[in-house]
Amino acid sequence: METNTKGIQTGKYAANRWFTFAILVLGAGTIFKLSSLKDAFYVPMQQYMGLTHTQIGMALSVYGMVQTVGLIFSIYLSDRFSKKYMISFSLVGVGLTGIYLSTFPTYAGFLAAFAILAIFGEVVYWPVLLKAVRLTATEEEQGRIFGFLEAGRGVVDTIVAFSALAIFSAMGSSAAGLKGGILFFSGVVIVVGIISFFLVPHDEIRETDDSGEKIGKNAAAFQGMMQAVKMKEIWVVAFTIFSVYCVYCGLTYFIPFLNDIYAMPAALVGAYGIINQYGLKMIGGPVGGFLADKVTKSTAKYIRAAFVVAAVAMTVIVMLPHENMNIYVGMTLTLGFGAIIFTMRAVFFAPMDEIKVPIEISGAAMSIGSLVGYFPSTFAYTLYGSMLDKTPGIAGYKMVFMTMIAFSVVGFFISSYLVHVIKKKQQA
Figure 1 (tube, helix red, strand yellow):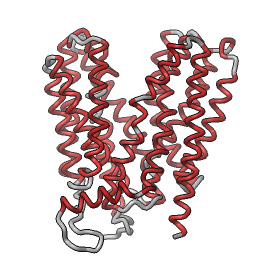
Figure 2 (cartoon, rainbow, N blue to C red; figure 1 turned 45 degrees about the vertical axis):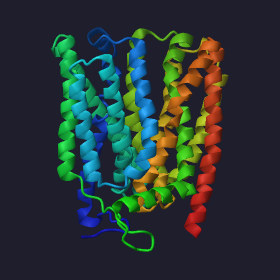
Figure 3 (cartoon, one colour; figure 1 turned 90 degrees about the horizontal axis):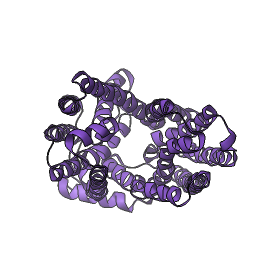
């Protein structure tokens, strides 16, 4: 069998790793449908589960809090057990939690279910998935593999979401239809979990310390966690992701911007949302991966360049006379900016390979990246929303956009330092 230094199959065996990658994409595209139930069934959840806006919001807050705290523990867990078990266990766990949700539990049960979904999906699954994806590609393919992951998630996500909506409609858009949709999400993710158990390969779990002495899996996992925490390059990647995500959170406010300033018709809101949610993800992933691998030859360099493009593009948007412009021009401008950010979001974990994170601590590195990188979700939406509430109209949106420019500038400096760190590491 032909392998490279990372243990990745090459030559005629390369088809095996692409098959494994396809299984990983199936899981990544299905596991978060239940925690994102509001995206497809917000109003039915209110009607048939008796939930208010505040109660749904509280469930999402519980999810976020458990995610943030849990990722700290994930730094240890993600390299302690084989990815075969972690991935399949979390997928099946999410599915079983979904079956419980389909019973329309009490509000306390609803909150508990979202806490459990966060544990399975964000704490156990996500860092291990990123680790597994990294290991399916060579160093030269990292941008593309993460780009394909994002695009594949978009395709699977779209198919599964519309299938659930079709079930809901076929069952009369009723309480039974909502249960049917939830059970469909649950069944799909359980099936993918079972498939993953048989088809995702094992990890070699480290049982030795840095000097080769046998110390046991628990001690080795703890030592790996501390090694990852002390590796400054991982934190530089994490804060690069943090900067991208701060800008990404601002994309949420393009729809109210177009509605308030351009008076976007209701018929266009749905079309814009579909393109923004699914289209940009499917296109931005492969494009970002290709540009990173083939044009800049470095994901870190691509992210740095994209921060410059994003800052310039948003500066132009801020300066335009939006009150006198055509709605389709506004849609094109905002979608174009969104596309830039989606190309960055698709590949922002790929620099973990450029900084030469050891294979045995890949899971811990991805956990740190997720903990820091996704932290903006705890404050950015509140920050942007408060700006719009305190300063209504175009002035408020310009404040949001200028803040996004500021985060892009910060991201440029952090990613520039990351490029410097990578260059020094390569010369060492």
